[in-house]
Length: 125
Image (cartoon, rainbow, N blue to C red; front, side, top):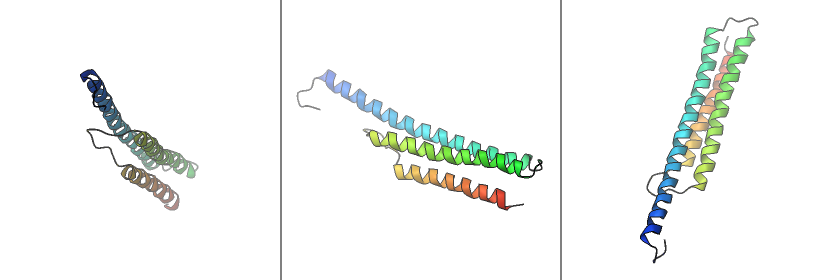
């Protein structure tokens, strides 16, 4: 802010700063929402395999479960990518932004868990 800024200009700049902070918080909530959706897709895959494991042909339930679990892993990775790109463009003023490496760690763990789960579905009898 310049030294000779008027009160109106200062208030406008404060509103802009607060809007950017709200966007950072909205990005964090959106990331959490996509992660919940990823977990739901993984849960649907597990439930489908558990409920319809005796379908004919025998691989059909595994294949359908694999699609849902893979979708959950992809959602987690996509959510991290979008949140990281958004957070790189923004700067916070009065709130703490989520740390990008932490978001990446969470997303990669969910995706890796999905991969391990798919492998376990196909290896277990």
